[in-house]
Length: 187
Image (cartoon, rainbow, N blue to C red; front, side):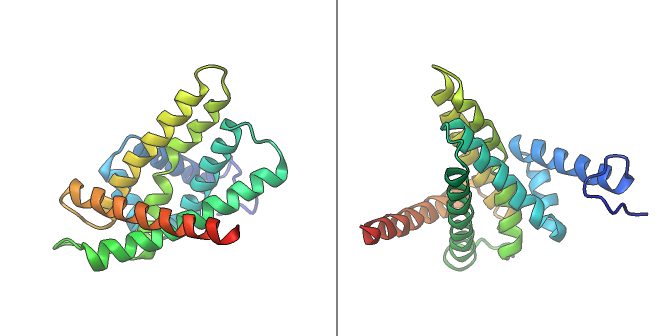
């Protein structure tokens, strides 16, 4: 019997959901390929992935000391939009330009795995700490880059991490040029 209240920890269905989410967060942050494979294959995990990106973005907002509601909402919108652009680029580059022999992937698979790859970004909230906060913020951001590569490698069924790095770098360059172009056009 399913509960009608969202996330009622007395409900076995909700308890299992939260347990699975916690395991996925830890597994993806730990760079475990098996976690990414599980996430990739679970079509119901799309909203969990979006939630991870939102938590990561909130961590960034706290870490840079942004506590205004409008600033946080703007950061969330930009984070979600840029993530979607990067997912689209990753799918295109990974499946059309640089596919591996075993590459069989789609938007949902890349969305889910890359969404969970944002898990270490939650730690960017530690950026608010005096003196060492910027180091912790930077470390969490670099950690996210590593998890993104693993997420891409697993979602695109690559046997080589170097191919996943190439997809990520190419996507990052195109993404950066697009963003830079939009900023220039705004001025």
